[in-house]
Length: 61
Image (cartoon, rainbow, N blue to C red; front, side, top):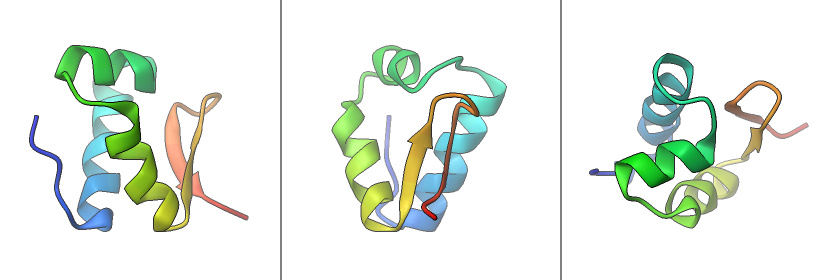
Protein backbone atom coordinates (compact mmCIF):
# COMPACT_ATOMS: atom_id res chain seq x y z
CA UNK A 1 0.00 0.00 0.00
CA UNK A 2 1.26 3.45 -0.89
CA UNK A 3 1.07 5.91 2.02
CA UNK A 4 0.86 9.59 1.10
CA UNK A 5 3.49 11.90 2.64
CA UNK A 6 0.94 14.69 3.13
CA UNK A 7 -0.61 14.19 6.58
CA UNK A 8 -4.02 15.59 5.56
CA UNK A 9 -4.30 13.14 2.69
CA UNK A 10 -2.99 10.29 4.86
CA UNK A 11 -5.58 11.11 7.53
CA UNK A 12 -8.39 11.10 4.98
CA UNK A 13 -7.25 7.86 3.38
CA UNK A 14 -6.77 5.95 6.63
CA UNK A 15 -9.99 7.17 8.25
CA UNK A 16 -11.94 6.28 5.11
CA UNK A 17 -10.45 2.79 5.07
CA UNK A 18 -11.17 2.35 8.79
CA UNK A 19 -14.76 3.50 8.30
CA UNK A 20 -15.50 1.51 5.15
CA UNK A 21 -13.45 -1.67 5.37
CA UNK A 22 -11.53 -2.34 8.59
CA UNK A 23 -12.70 -2.76 12.17
CA UNK A 24 -9.33 -1.78 13.67
CA UNK A 25 -6.02 -0.14 12.85
CA UNK A 26 -4.16 -3.40 13.43
CA UNK A 27 -6.39 -5.25 10.97
CA UNK A 28 -5.87 -2.52 8.37
CA UNK A 29 -2.09 -2.72 8.81
CA UNK A 30 -2.06 -6.52 8.63
CA UNK A 31 -4.24 -6.68 5.54
CA UNK A 32 -2.48 -3.82 3.71
CA UNK A 33 1.00 -4.96 4.77
CA UNK A 34 2.08 -1.69 6.40
CA UNK A 35 3.49 -1.05 9.85
CA UNK A 36 1.38 0.65 12.49
CA UNK A 37 4.21 3.13 13.08
CA UNK A 38 4.22 4.21 9.44
CA UNK A 39 0.67 5.49 9.97
CA UNK A 40 0.66 6.51 13.63
CA UNK A 41 3.91 8.50 13.67
CA UNK A 42 3.12 10.99 10.89
CA UNK A 43 -0.43 11.45 12.13
CA UNK A 44 0.71 11.99 15.72
CA UNK A 45 3.20 14.55 14.43
CA UNK A 46 0.27 16.31 12.74
CA UNK A 47 -1.70 16.38 16.01
CA UNK A 48 -3.91 13.28 15.71
CA UNK A 49 -4.23 10.08 17.70
CA UNK A 50 -6.00 6.79 17.08
CA UNK A 51 -9.23 6.47 19.07
CA UNK A 52 -10.10 2.78 19.34
CA UNK A 53 -13.72 3.45 20.33
CA UNK A 54 -14.31 5.53 17.21
CA UNK A 55 -11.94 3.43 15.08
CA UNK A 56 -10.58 6.67 13.66
CA UNK A 57 -7.78 9.17 14.01
CA UNK A 58 -9.02 12.30 15.76
CA UNK A 59 -7.50 15.62 16.71
CA UNK A 60 -5.74 15.74 20.07
CA UNK A 61 -7.39 17.97 22.67
